[in-house]
Length: 570
Image 1: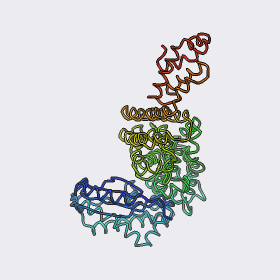
Image 2 (image 1 turned 30 degrees about the horizontal axis):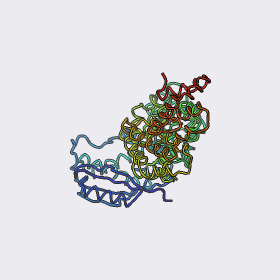
Image 3 (image 1 turned 45 degrees about the vertical axis):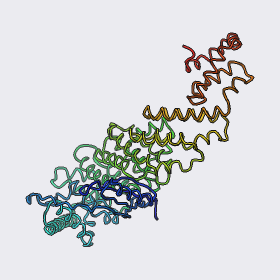
Image 4 (image 1 turned 180 degrees about the vertical axis):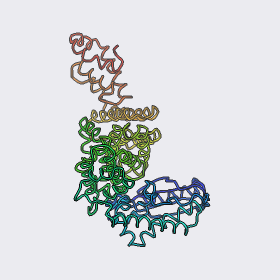
């Protein structure tokens, strides 16, 4: 099933430079025209446009090149290293290092996905090793995917590296099959994992054997959620302390890191129906359940945005909160930051919802800052994410459903409040300034089917929202002034201040209405506030009003805070 589609523009400034992302858009024509303009204007020596299609089942993008123009890429000569350096992995034990496991996971990703297993399980389960060896083509292709780039990077001979890795894989498979035939991996049906851990303490091959025991316990389980539950069961039955406990927890943590490193597995664990933003929020809630619970207690609205974590993920969250599995916690935190800094939409097709989930993520990650991530890392991630929120495509999608210019301005004010970073704040402010200074905005405000008081209240609320958005003084003052001028036109059409002065109402009531306008409570600052203040001063100077206020000192006491707000009283 085809999902949301967008187009990405990549540029190279000079022939030797690498490709860098210039812009992402949902309009194919705009992407192609922008790329050609960049090439024609000399801003790039080469451009490329790719079509990115989201698969909602796997939450992965499929990339297809639509356009390539400009100078060809410069082929770099391979870096020649000393022949004594040799292959990256020299012995079977090198295959079990984190870097090697990560590389194996990439080159065998499709095969491992079909088998429903991780790289750690492949290196510790004889049945998986035998299945891979029988496939033949899969293993050969994986070896070539490793050998060819390594040869290009180091200057070594490709065929020598291929033969070396073939021998290495054969040795690793034979070692694993031999261990299986000898029964070196005891099953957990007849004995507990704690008993196995105590028996293996002090053994030279304890890490390899315990890895096989833990991996074997996952045999036959389908789905990442079921495997997570089984791993949590093993942790519950592990020794209570000491090296035997670590002997169980280390392989469990390694499998968990690989399990959560797969987007397909992550979707199964936190919920396949969740979008990207909700999945990240669920991960944060799992990693920091106590902090998120405290936030939800203070702001119940977060409970709607942050999905609940139950079952295996909740059990894992309790262990993470207790300080167990620190490598997994760090890995998940880095994953969340990496996804925030990527170009993937958090909620494709729902721009307003993206703002909501991003705000929720900002609150939750900030609450966990210091334990998982530094505050600087969190701020940097959201600053990068904010760049995608001020692009023309996103802003157009964000305000597309607004029925009036006023509603559009209110959404843009909210956008200003939720983006971070000086440049992003300025970009968002420019969008809002263009909206409130447009002829359409003033015309709609003057002809809107609302009372004059409602219009002025709306403009006053916009001014307050702009004041809370932490914009630069220049941008804030420009937008506030523009809103004040529109408010002045609206008030002048209705002659509101004059109507208040002539109204057959007691003097304290008229003064209170004028002072609220002058203080910016019921109307925007600017011409409206100035006129209201001038009329209030005239009323104060009137002998009749002075007499009325003198006869009702409690009314004057009520007006005093408003008078102080507009500078008419000390």
